[in-house]
Amino acid sequence: MSLNQICQDIYNEVQGTIAMAVVDLSTGLPLSVYHQVPHFDQSYLDAVSSAAVDMFRGKTVKTVEAMLSDQRKKPANNAIKEIQMTTDGTFHFMAILPDKPDILAILITTQRTSLGMGWTALRRAIPNLTELAP
Image (cartoon, rainbow, N blue to C red; front, side, top):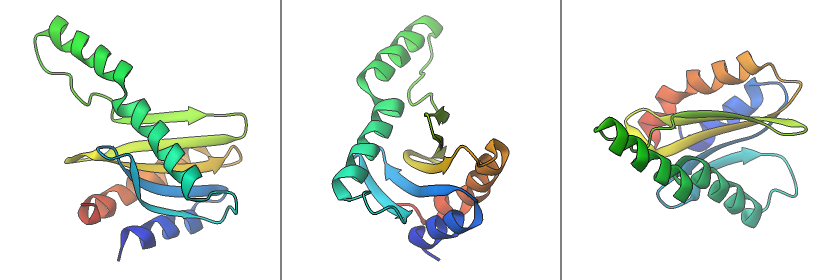
């Protein structure tokens, strides 16, 4: 099994999936992506990956984490573990892999997809993704 195979399996499992990806937050580069959308070229995928980095590790996020660390007197680095985002037509399910704080799994679906199904499929795949991710 490979990251690409897991991404494809999730794509096929969840009705309404647009794309499934694994992103390295330390570099901003996609490690694996599966989709069937013609306009999702490499520059588009790189831009989406960079946006995910900003949401989890961006400058303002780091600033808030530093403020929390100072206030609580304990580290609050890499505090965001999951985000569920909704756009006009899509749901984005994003989760950091356990024990791999710089690896992010992203599932993008239409809004016809059940939120529960999206999270269930992503969380069920996380152990395999964690095992295979660098």
